[in-house]
Length: 339
Image (cartoon, rainbow, N blue to C red; front, side, top):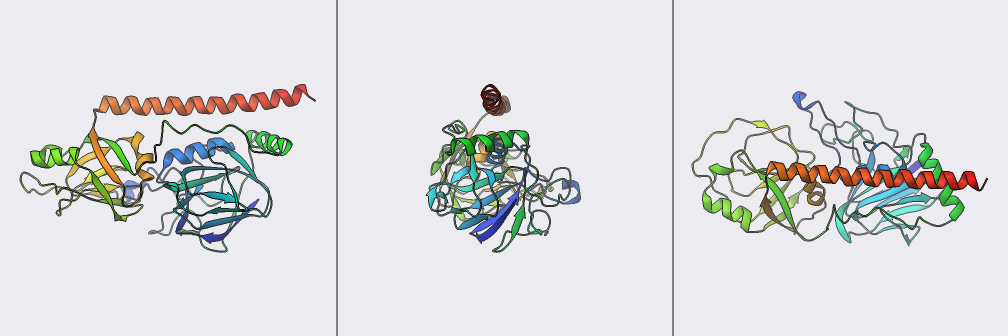
């Protein structure tokens, strides 16, 4: 099956969970801004969680399906439509031949993800299909998607075939969907939980208090590399030289202008600015769905609390996967009993 890009929109790229193991060579991890939406979308269509998806930013992307295809749309609600009719999210959808999936404008969040049964057939580079445009590697020819590009899908799984058969038989979408309420709030002001950074105590006490008590606004200088924030200026007790060291998704650095920057999916491999905080893993998907103009309130928690929150998230994902498994078994059993 194949998908034709009619309009790429503001930005559409192929992204999976990232390119791990190559930072020592100066190659960034990259991958999807909202890793959780990718995992859930792939579970819904019967793929491995790490399979590549299309990451769609804000608006304007249009895809035409040249054959029938099982898909799932997760992440931000960018008002998706199929041939002009509202498309359901957070559940498997059967797209018919020649139908057009369009994302018109953000209702909540700013990034949507589309997973395709069988996955996208693009070459893996360093064990990932993710697009890294600055290095011209991964994804579709190492670049963002453009008008006229054609993508191909692989072999569908048994679970996908069962869902496809059921959707054809019922001739209507599934009534159930993934309950994402415990993972996302899609608010214009979010409380983002952090760990204290390695240089937190080298900032003035007033700056520490301002950082944790006053909101910071995401500026227009926000992209896949980082979110530049605007708010109370953060001052060091004493200026000092800091050797560059490893950074990760969610590291909050403070350059010389005193305005923090949150490093995002396409962050550099090392950084030399003081680190005042680190966004916990569980809150990264909510952060990835925030837009310029939205505000962040930071709150510190302990490593033990962050670990427990991550374990709870993984338990909920496991329960969701088991729920999908039981739905498949019910469909299989009913099909057998009814001949």
